[in-house]
Length: 252
Image 1 (cartoon, one colour):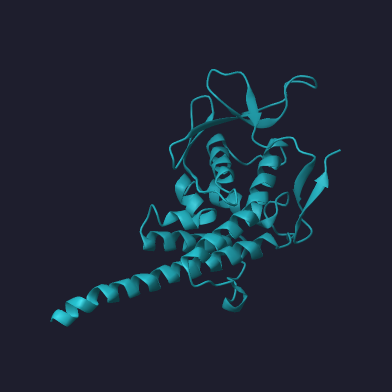
Image 2 (cartoon, helix red, strand yellow):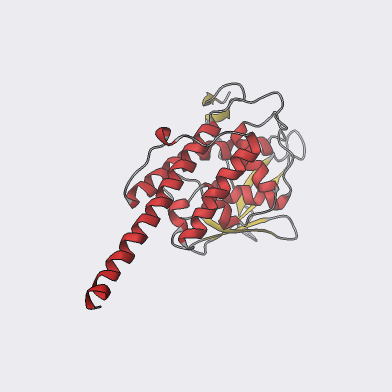
């Protein structure tokens, strides 16, 4: 009996290590799934031809109004951080949900095991999560640009706020994510991060040829000055609808 009680903690540690490894493998597979989706060419039967297939997947998920802000972040951008806030089973459910959403949106098969970069340490969880954010970030940016340019018009203020929250949670080396995204009575977007930092965003529209511009800006209540969410830069990321890549073009 004494030997049993001595060995029990080691057995528990081994089982936990195996479960964590299962999660790391699941995150790695989902990251590859997202990468494959990002490379898919548009098809004639696609319901939204102005969006790339990954942009369409993101839009479809958000417009379902099915998931909370933090759940979307754990599904798409910060699976490595999810373990600090949820049980292992809940974290695995987020990744399985993401895989289901991809398949239901574009009928893309899950990647075969021989194409997935599996790792055997928790450090690989961080690496594959960073890779995922590097993949998805330009597509979130491109989707926001299309909303600003009135190319994509399907988002209501609350859904746009959620998209902004995802974008703010997609920096490659981030340790932060947006946990709540809410809209006030003036349609201002209020984001709260996991360190309880509050940021405010609003959509602006061009009033005339010389006054104002279409944009999404960050602001502080009571302060006139604003900062564009998508800064004016010489190179704009363009998601190609005809190829399997994204490119950068000079802004002229």
